Image (cartoon, rainbow, N blue to C red; front, side, top):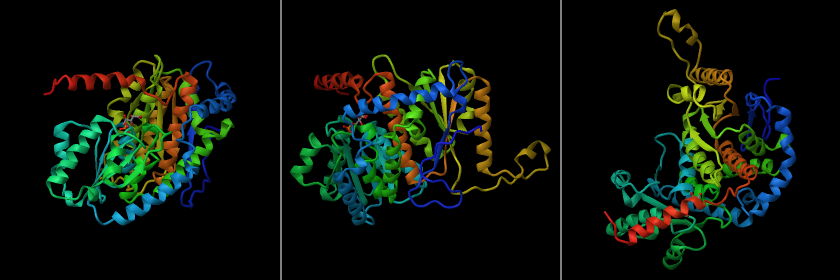
Length: 437
Ligand code: PA5
């Protein structure tokens, strides 16, 4: 049997009940190095229990939240707020950065078409020209700004907030009609929200930014965009059950972390063969980089896109330094799948006859997999049935869970980020000394 199948939920070819998720990971091409075989891979399962205890001791809620009453109550508030607001806004603009921005960018890109309404803009930077571009076509009277910051003190987000607020007031609009906050219990934003009675949703205290996509941080904007957030949450919940499972063959996040660790590669390429998942890779980059890069250890995440990057980065993956593990994501069913109509009798293109775009893409992924394998580059393939809210929710939790387990393999704390603090202090010092441009 070539494929090892680890299913989540129930798989049926023709019929899926809402919220069911099917995915499996093929680890076969991980075992290319001498010394790494399936037996030693599976043996790592003896660590699950102690690693779960260690993670538990770190007091993080990203995998526990789905059963939390206050979270479930907030979910209802989000849904009722977004129903009330449904036809009011033409544009949703998120002010936020890092973990407060990347999740909703990934959700929007995965689940909504290019021309979906309402439009979404995420101000994930403070580049003045970028900001000017984002505001150019906005009708403020039909725009809702969601200011997202767990700490409520992030300078980039506060600068965006001040900028937006000034313009709202200049246009004589009521700030309370155009601004909502998603923030932690303390910090500048929480104080403003309380004092001026802004609609506010919470970021749970025990969930860090990059693990917060399935809280109000990602769910509020998602609901306003018309996405089925119950289904997203259900996918996350399904995977959180796997995360807590002490059996190796029923814990996909642990299997993934084991593969990352045992492969002994310093770089992990995430290469979905689906444009809709391109932004998911950016979300993953932050998650893995900020979580694992500690004490001289860590894995460098590299985003790639199939088939596009076959004409860009794949040369390096196949033939460059042997420091990479390539992780493919393959989609089984697509929303559309037109045939490729070969309008020539040129025999050299016969191989395309009868193919569809999906079958060409799948063949390209298989070809790249084989080329990597022949070159001795370890690779794994995650197959998902389709890109939909429950699958996406499960994917978020799969990677968050794997990252948490990887932290324990590496003996680091995956949930802090001491390395970015120094830069923040120096930024503040530099601005306080009035070295302003
Ligand atoms: O993962 C993290 O904790 C960070 O990347 C934060 O998300 C980022 O710094 C933004 O922080 P905040 O939400 O407090 O504005």
